[in-house]
Each structure stands twice: as structure tokens, then as C-alpha cells.
Picture 1: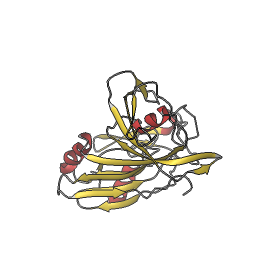
Picture 2: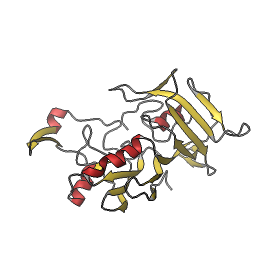
Picture 3: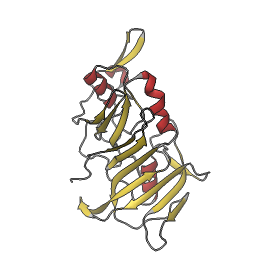
Picture 4: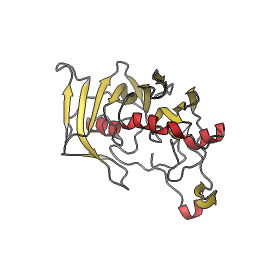
Length: 264
């Protein structure tokens, strides 16, 4: 979904508070979906973020973000995200409560020491050969699972990421489910996605390049403009499971999103 953003001059004002600049958005639309706290301790808060709620302030979104809602709920201005999910993607997100712990948890994600599993809905259709990169089937006799590798680029100010003929920087393992159903007259099925890298829009780009664009994707294959307060068609993509060894306690952690796909 691409918000039709109001003119910033009429929607925003910048004020000074305690020597820092804070941006407040006037008439910011309310996001009518709430996050669920999956886990919390003295160091972290793990939430199940809904579709349409941004992780952090950006563009026209400030108060209606997971970060600001958490800070206001707990009265803790030091809360920061350890990583991010796109506004339109639902699922598991980790926030850090203490400044001295930020580095440990953020490096966990930057160094790819986590195991991420996503789930999406996309057409039940034959895979097409992508223009760039490679497709490797795990079993030659079966279309899935497969490994998609390519080079994904993203330009500042451009909504879509895109693939180019260059050294591989993005890799995804894609599995197909076994429960097809019909949505809006189209046969769709769930896919389980395992990103091995973390490029912008990686899973959305890889699925689209296979001729399997994720349902509700307003960027791929084409950019579709929708009103910013239209919540009728979510991107059917969820960060379903997140696993890692806690860098502070050493414990094995695993968190699972309860977000629904389709009309399930």
C-alpha cells in the first residue's frame, strides 16, 4: 500500500523538547490494529506486530507506530527496536529496553545470527524463469522447495527494489504448502519463506520474480496507489517465527506470530 500523504507543511510541526527535535504529525490517521506482547523481561520486549503498523516513525507516521505505542504504554523512552519489519508486514519484532543492551541485540540481527521464517499467500501457479539470478530445486523432480538467488538493489526515493545482473547478495529458500483455497476467485496457497540474507523487500521481490506475487502487495509487480487509511487489503506476509540464542543470557529463544493470513 502506498499512502497518499498529506502535505507535510500542513500536517507536521517540529518542536524542541529537552534540546532534541521531535516531529509531531497533526491529524495522523489511527491504525485500528493492536500489537500483542509475546514475551518481556528486564532487557527485551517481543511483540506480534499487526499489518499496517510501522515499526518506527517514518514519513507521516509517528504516534501510530509500534515503537511510540510501546514507549507510551511502558513509560520507557529508551525502548528501541533490535530490527525492523516493513509497515505492511505482520509478525515478530524484538525491542530492547536498556541502552546498554542495544548493541548486543542489534548486532545479533546485523550479523545474521537469527533464524527467520516467514509465511505468505501467493498464487498456486507454475514457477516462471526469472530474468536475473538463479533458481535451484532441492529435488529435481519437484517444483518446491527451491532456492532463489539474485542481486537486489534499492535506490533512495524509489518505492520498488529490483534485481540486476550482478554478484548474488540475496538468497531465499522457498517451500510451498499443501492447502490451496480460493480468494477473490483466484486459487492461492501458503508458502513458507526462509531468507538467508536481509535485503529490502527481498521476499517480495523473489516471489514476484518467480511469477508468484504475494497477495495484497501494492509494490510488486506494479505500484498501486491506495488511500493511506484503506486497511481493506493487507499484504499477506507474516514474519511467522524468530529463533536466536540470547546474547545476554545465552538462552535459546523462539517466538511465533499468531497473525492470520487471508480470511483464516
